[in-house]
Length: 121
Image (cartoon, rainbow, N blue to C red):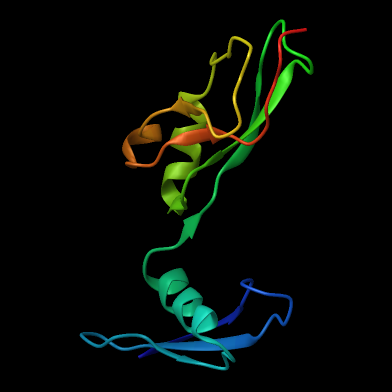
């Protein structure tokens, strides 16, 4: 049996969580005050995920950079491969809000999308 202490990041409360892991059993999460905290604790110790956010260049755009993010969280271990996949990626303006920038980033099944509209300069 193993116990993991976490702080929930799902809302401003920051509940202190204790997750108990026992072979062959579902994780037991204690300390959460809502269902989101329970799900966060369970996921964080079994298959941690993160939303990737970064910026990409848009030569000829105004501004010349666009913020982007994954459309859904991706496995934590896929963050570095996803960033590697973005090396050399540039966009051509105009860029639409929610435009798919990279499909299936790093084989995760999740698209990278723009989070801002970028018009032509």
